[in-house]
Length: 287
Image (cartoon, rainbow, N blue to C red; front, side, top):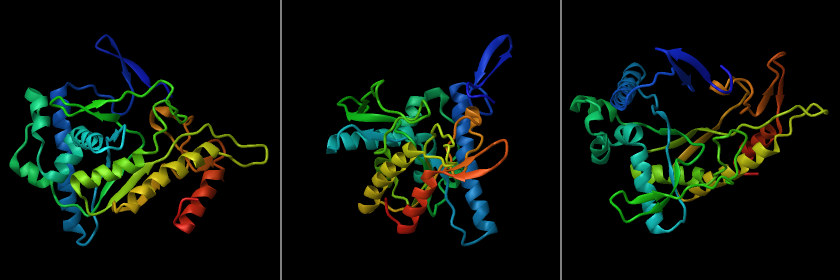
C-alpha cells in the first residue's frame, strides 16, 4: 500500500481507503462498532484475569487531548472538558462505566444500543491505562457557551515533523497524562506510543544522524518528566518504534525507528537516537 493510500471503484464510485479495513460507515453504525470494541475490551479483561490470575491488565488506547492554549485555570478547565468529550466513546466509558449525557445527546438517533450488563463489563477495573500520544486533538481556549471550550486554530506555519500530520507539540506529553490523571485517576499510566518519522539516510561514514528525532525525544520526554514531577503516575514510555517497519499507508518510505533497516539487505544500523535513548534509559533522565 503506497504513501497516497489506495483507490478502488465501489458501485461505480471512486473510493479512497486511508487505513485498513477501509470501510465507510454511517454515524450510527460507526458508534455501534465503537461500542462493540469497548465491550470486547471489557470481556477481554475478564478473560485474561480468569485465565491468568494476578496478571496486570490494561488497554492501549489513543488519547485525544485538548491542550490549553494558556496555562490558566479557565483554559485548563476548558481543556479538561474537551478531553473528556473527545474520548467519550472509548476511554471515558471504559473508566466511568457510562456514556456521558453530552455524548448520547449529541449522537441522538445515532447513539449506540447497549445494556447495563454491557456497561458493567466495559468498566471492568484496570491495573493501568496505556495511551498513544503524538499530537493534540486541538489547542483549547475557554468559552462562555454551553460547550465550555473553543479551538485556538494552529497556524499553517506551525512547525511539523516529517509526517505531514505531525505538528511539533511536545507539551502534549505533559497535558495528556496530566488531564488523563485529573479526569479519570487511573492507578498507573503508560505512554504506549510516542515518536516521530524522519527522513533518515545513511551518511558516508555509515551512521544515521537523526538529530531531528533526538531533538523531538528530548523535548517530549522533558514534558513527560514535568508531569511525573507533579505526581502524575506515569510508569513507562515506549518510543515508536524500535525498528523501521511498514507504516500503514506510509509504506516503507516513512521511517519511525531508532534503528535503521535496509529493507533490501535487512542490515540494521542503530541511529543517533538509539544512542541517545540508551543513555537516557541508563541514567533514567533526559540527557
